Amino acid sequence: MHVYVINLARRPDRRAFMQQQAERLGLKFDYIDAVDAQTDAPEFAEIEVRAGVHGRISRGDLACTLSHRTFWRRFLASGEPYAVVLEDDAILADDCGQFFADSVWIPPGADVVKLERYGRHRPMLMDRDTRPAHSRRVGRFYGKCAGTAGYVVSAAGARALLEATTSVDDPIDQMMFNPGRSTLFGRLAPFVLEPAICEQEQVAVPSDIRGKRQSSRGGLQGVLNELRAVPRQLAHAMSLALPLLQGRLERRVLTFRR
View (cartoon, rainbow, N blue to C red):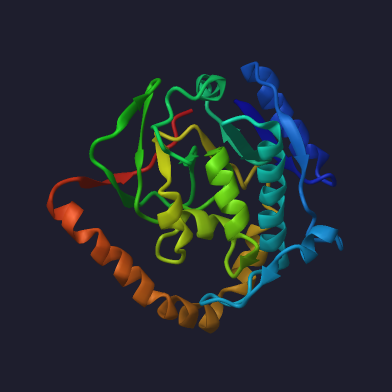
């Protein structure tokens, strides 16, 4: 599979960071210029931005979504069945090359496989029955698992994502990987590798987006927005009650094994 890396042109340090990993691991990356939130790039006019339950998304989050849309289009133009995308602050596991080399480990019908562990170490619901994937396992997950620093997408998944993001009201990682906030999660039915093969390193390589997201959605307004999302979260929880009682799901803490 081709591995694409989204990188801001004004951040050559990040590109160097990813290229050092590529050389260490014997990998080849195709770099994609990210849409820069600090510019008036024409891509900002290509999608409608709506105010959603959690308010209006920041320009940085919108630029991130547009950058992934650039990747999806470029991947679809290649005619290949699957591709990997990484953001330029992804720390990669030593064995990630096995997963990039072929697609035989991807479950049939899976359109998105998340490769990343992100955020706090908290349990989420996953299928009890998972499939072997080289030295790891892969299975469906049903809880919030934000971040878009690394995932595999199929051609069908990329087309669905392009269609779903012509109008947005949430950051792309929430749309893809947070069932309590997004109806797209159910359509994508994403899988995840456990342990993950990448993790964002926002200390060594600071994020250009995260601070803006926190400042635009914090405080009292952020609390009120979270309360408005409760009905959808409850509906999602109720949909999992039966498979949980039947023992088809279990709680797991997603880890990163380097």
